[in-house]
Length: 301
Image (cartoon, rainbow, N blue to C red; front, top):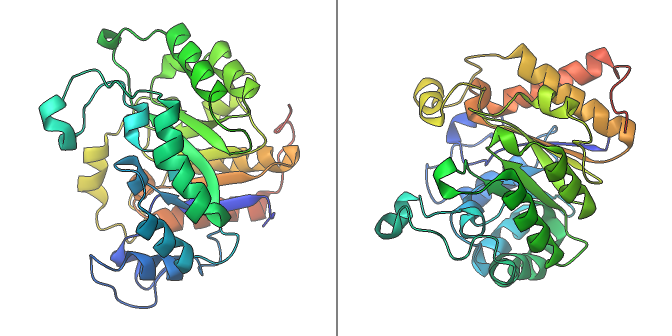
């Protein structure tokens, strides 16, 4: 495999992967760092998605534990605390404030203090793309494409340079020339995501100038049209492929080839809810790349 390609999964705390990724049995709880250490030994894994940072900023103890479990130079694709990206409070953890406007939306100072600062100090050797995930913003919130783009411009203008930032949106209308332009201006990657109400990864890749940074990130989360709850009910405990998607695999392989042709790193993250078993989705995409070789016409700037 090209050294530019970094495959991984969206989280790693799945004891049902025993016999596939893990050689030992682990309890369902309190084994996160042990699982992570063994995860990082799997031949195709060269990154990992840390989803838990979306719900609360990482603690020093958590960062130290993860850093100790990972080999040197193993970068992580970490989601950013949703206090920074949620337009309104909608988490079950914020029941008392649900539906209220979040005053910390795109608060650069809060991000620098609570997220970036600790990660730079205690997790620098594993600091890969930091993903700002913006869940679907409803029309009632009054955020137009221009409003969103201008807010992103102000936010990234206030952040330190030299950090691999990435933006994931769940509003297909945001995939516009101004959106890609502002990301490119700040060297921020667009996250090519497979999600319920988003166009497929391949369609996003074909949009003009959708590669906006010196690296690319893809997150295969759900097949378009399927909800998260439906996937959880259908696929748990995630120990085998249950709904293989040739289209999704081909799209991820095309994105990987694009990165290779552009000579930039590609972080390709698979989720259990995409096909039923994220490690086997990674294997399937890797096999496509090994068997097919580069496709002509892909990777043009």
